[in-house]
Image (cartoon, rainbow, N blue to C red; front, side, top):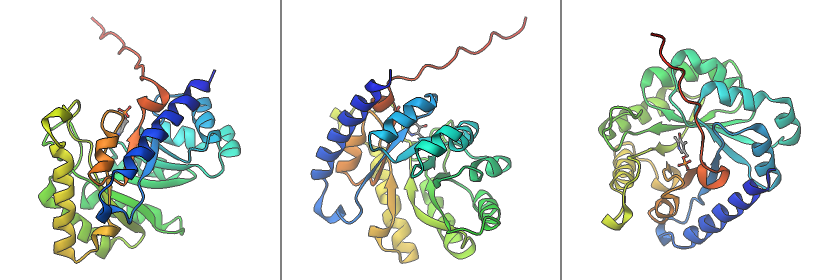
Length: 251
Ligand SMILES: *Cc1c(COP(=O)(O)O)cnc(C)c1O
């Protein structure tokens, strides 16, 4: 019973492609990609989406990324899969993340210490540099990861100067949930766009080479319209997530 994923993916792709046509002309150099966020969903749904043509997948728990990425059936049936890590990363979990075959990008680097540790660990692999994004906390919510926008240029500079095993790919944000788009453009996306401007100005980078990862199920079309190049879409493709209730605290 995996047909619903094929339908979910098809619908999301239609919306995705329609939104791409509404992008501002000056943003057209980087074509957006759709990352299917498969967290909490079983391997068979990943395989079904892959067989329907999807290649980029996202996970936000280290353990789950590592398990799915190393699963023999996924390895066999999805040889060209590309994993994005989109969750909080602690330095002691870096080995688990990089021991994921077909890891394409880590989107959540938010400190120089983490960047250096990832750089050191990836260096021992001796492969192409690993793509990373800098996560920016655009909504100033304590519960969300990411550095404040003003700190982004220094971290990007650190990545460029000190971390040759990593390839700086762009900026990522989660932003506040449930923003009502009838109030106008999502301010978190605007903060990330400004942040890119600032980073590029300070470091002399070309804006067309710095991606923006923003937009999820509820707002990915809007995100694309304002310049997102990487949307992370979960429930629209795979259906709502069910989390196991927490075990009751002992008396
Ligand atoms: C879960 C998750 C998503 C996808 O959320 P949906 O609302 O299901 O599309 C996107 N980005 C991150 C960082 C996530 O953890």
